[in-house]
Length: 408
Ligand code: ATP
Ligand code: MG
Image 1 (cartoon, protein in one colour):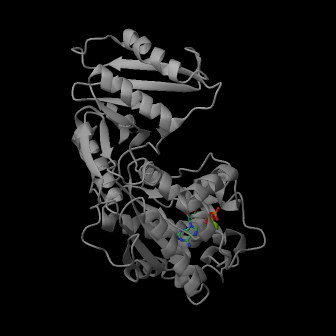
Image 2 (tube, helix red, strand yellow; image 1 turned 180 degrees about the vertical axis):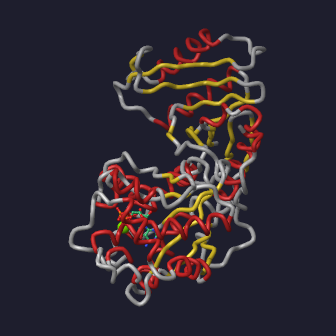
Image 3 (cartoon, helix red, strand yellow; image 1 turned 180 degrees about the horizontal axis):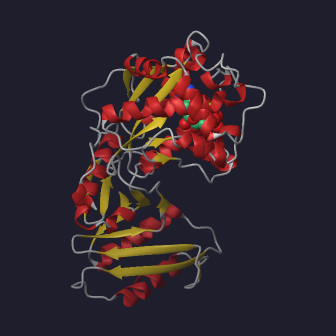
């Protein structure tokens, strides 16, 4: 069996049961390809009965479920002394610890009717095990292997590993936000980090036909598909950005083009967020990484929206971001060399310190500026992306909607 433990949301009082149900639904989705698996839920945990299905493969899949803090492969015995001892022996034989491994038994008697107390059980189990494995050395302070025996009324669980899960909050339980998804390394990581905190994410991508290619668009679809492995289904909004972008090129303020573009993106994203009922925007900005991500730039750019602007990567180093992107499976796609709309008209020296007054003035005097933004919103195409293909199969996990006051 695999024992899955819930994460920090366990603290959230009466919301717990809703959160637990969301995790269970996500787990059900992940185990679908394994027909032998039987799931059951108990306070604070889920049991995954394997019935011959591959433990390692399932552990790898399930540790990515948001809200799961840790996973232990366990052997199950009836709560009866001889059987617990025999199962502990079997367990040890499977692990086959090398000679010289330090070891201790930690029993926990949850079911108080069991005839032996925890400390007594440590001795009663450890002594015969040590006789069978003379190479094991006892170390009760910091052993390399801790054989845990959890005695409950129905069953006793024997395990030693505690494999870290991804943690966070269950999918969609903290509301919805719009992710500005480029084809780069950062924004997919920002999206995954947001989903991990329980946000439902919809993606927005700005493209500039004919300056950006079909391949660049496909790259973003593929990136969204990788993210959808963690969410079941993700909406992707594709925004035609050429007209807006080219409107900035003839005004003689080339060093402000990126600032103006970013502000336009936030405005359009805000309109889409309102339409979709999302309460925040997310970007992959990381402080100081490029000219548009200095503090003065963030200040001027961020003022283009009244929505909370979430920047999950703001204080992270590039190497940490790259590490996450590799582990979530977006890195190889992100480094494909297709141009992004922002790299097209990049000025020689984009400003790191834009002047708010000048930016305001340019935007106020650009002919038909608001109409251009409105047209981009109106021309936006929306597709639902799933791990399986562009169609949305009916049996994927429904994404949680909205936020409910009583949860807090
Ligand atoms: P990324 O790796 O996410 O592209 P970056 O370091 O290349 O980030 P920029 O290109 O300056 O940084 O973009 C900053 C943020 O602006 C991105 O993380 C993303 O959230 C948003 N963004 C940039 N270009 C686009 C685009 N074409 N469509 C949607 N969002 C974009
Ligand atoms: Mg980029």
